[in-house]
Amino acid sequence: MFELFENDRAIATIAMICGECAGKRGREALLATISHKFYGLCLFCGEHKFNLEEINARFCMTCHGRIAQITKEYNKKGGMYGADPFWQKMRRKYGKDWQIKFKEGWNTKGRD
Image (cartoon, rainbow, N blue to C red; front, side, top):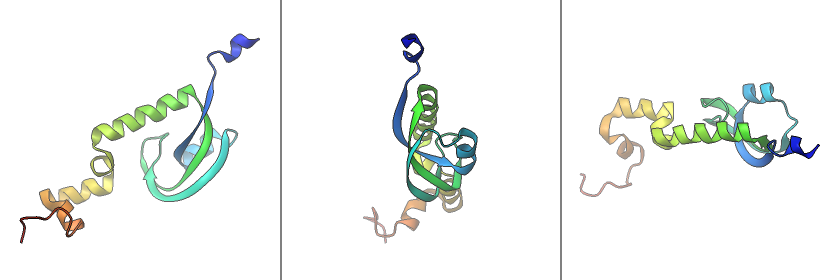
């Protein structure tokens, strides 16, 4: 009887999830909705989307592995500025100095 529960663990964590992924997975594991986000990375499908929820939920080890893999790929691409489609577009549009143009006064020593 207890052998069934040895490898089948569920751990609570905070994750961002889009409406489509939440609809596919159901709300059984949900402990609380922390906040609603306008835009961000869904940690289940790995895409940047609008209207996300930051949730506290219990996930199985398979879902934790999926979240870890998506987070690892996101960080490998460069985090927010390297993986987010908006910032990629700004980098292509404005070239090397895109950060200076968006963060005026930040890290601009030696520039006139």
